[in-house]
Image (cartoon, rainbow, N blue to C red):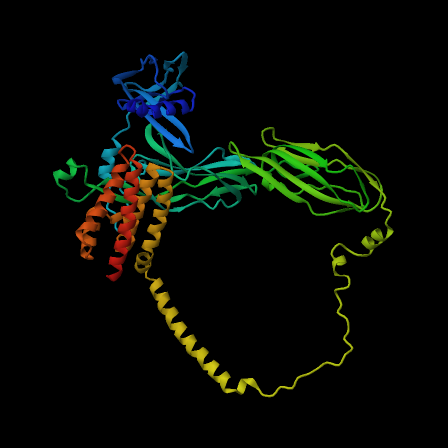
Length: 608
């Protein structure tokens, strides 16, 4: 009976499993060199009863297919979900240049036959010299503010890339700031982005992390990553130059110092170096819009539609209605000026309320811009509002396009209240609020005056307060001067704020722990403990390693147990980058150790 009860939960879980669509996905690099080994994998989210790999004739199969599988079960808010993956992996190598297509693989899951996506792989010739050898020759040790000049420029560089270099005034340009590298990058520092003078610029939202993909540049394979993207709208017709983008990159290379055979055997002998990168300046030719400009043109460039509506067709005099003009389409919506509209002379019209609903889409801005005019007819009658005229320049056709809205008829019934109309005619909108309040009445009673008994300034109490303020001012000036001197000491400031910075990192790590975000959790823990030691011991990050950090802690009198805990935390975080996902309990243990260690080190180092 107990045996049956023990397997009962598994039947309950299976009954609650959420059904999912069966898929198969193929993965492989899109760019490889001749002779380079790479992996081709096919991943399914369900166990297949039959798997048929495509015919691979353009590449040599070195190994495979090797199979692997994994299963995970999650329970969120009482809802159970299970995910499975079955992967078939091949190790291939390319023998000749060209572009080749690997056809889809087929699999049979239950009664459903599914196909993977095809993959296109470009094979390029082997570039002269490997990036690893060039990295060995290119490393120069970073000394404070110096940076390496021996790394060839074609191994690591940045660019500002544009989708077009000749545009009309107001036509959008997409600018992409990218980095190309053949070395291992550790960090970015001191980025100086172009000011884009002469343009109205808008940053295009993208991932905060730089994601690298392979790219072929002049026959060489690089890891290319997008740093930032912008949408630019030129504001003047001329040849406009975009300033270079500047960036300091911290990369990893072989040490130039003498090293033993053990460094090579254990993967050591690596150091961090800095290199300042500067992109090339770019000139854009901005052409003038054709002349003359048509009626209703207020700077719109793109492709648009226009619509006019009112919330009322019939109303009384002195009642308000809203005239709404909506412009939709793709182009420089944010830069369109207010349209010039004509209303009857007996209408009181307020400044329009402008509402924008704009998003960035495919190198341009799309959406709508709405103008809402509040109108108050002061007399009765039948009124025909003239059509709104709106013109824009279409760069795809090199011509202006003029649009007109349909006419709007408004029926206004005369107001029987004469006093209301008289009041409106006599006073303005703002003046009405101040009737009876702008002039104070004249007082006719006799004012009462009080005699002043003594002159307070000559009293002893006043003298005491005067000298007390002088003393407080001197004391405050002395304390403030000392505070300013301490704040100018960079090492002191970093040491003082080390704990606060580390606590912020740990707070983010705590959130990642709750979300069970494995990789981000260990990254925040690693940055938190490493940054705390760097700031507290006044050691630049570029010169900081595990050995000299432990030696410095020992010099400060930190006991060996805490040093061993520090070493364990750092090694665990570094190992976590290459290890499979850790258990939640292990992540909790690392978080607790790090939090406790920083508190203990803070108390110990404060005494020093």
